[in-house]
Length: 247
Ligand code: FPP
Image (cartoon, rainbow, N blue to C red; front, side, top):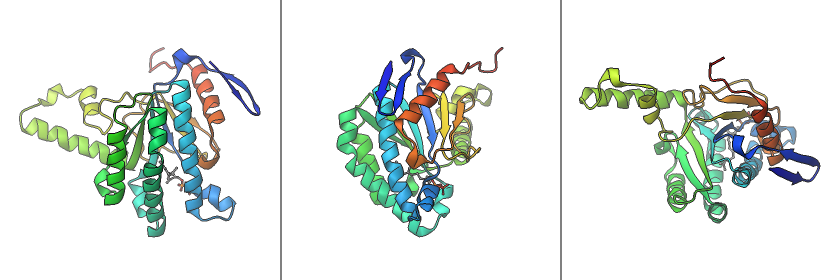
């Protein structure tokens, strides 16, 4: 599979060895804006263009699942002005992208504590999820009001209830049981985790699911991240040997 791109040599990717699930910690919108003496929200707006580009790239090359960390449980503590602006941006994106998602065969899904989202955002989210539910080119999981520890606590509580009610025995609990009570139930774990803007942190993202993910950290700020760099990372992913703890 090769891509002809402006400014770049065609990138060779093996279509049979692409990750089935890519997860991305989209970081650096604020710094992108600051460098240009712009308001932070301008960075988030530019970041939304990168989201569109990477979703389309997944469709083009055949990466079936993409999970994007769009808003963390900790992000609720940002200044009210920024939280509101992010919610407005998200709502606009959910409405304006619908035709594009349908056109590209993208199914939207969301993970996280969605009940905390403002009602008008939640409504547009539900509407987009319903509308796109039969699409099957790419599934995009938007992590919204998401925190991995909260997800794990929720899983523990639900499993405890199952045990208490006698529907499950504690010695029957396996890795698979745990996976089935996370927001990502039924979704294979990410093979590849990308973080932009150079930070060497996981920031409470998919702690259980990334157990065997290959991790790539790029210094590029999320608004500058584009499909060419994504393909470069996929190429490097294909050169790594994944051993899952075996020799
Ligand atoms: C991290 O940058 C980014 C976020 C907290 C929000 C992510 C949102 C988008 C990419 C845009 C909207 C998303 C969709 C799905 C339309 P930061 O603000 O933490 O940057 P900094 O670390 O440089 O301050």
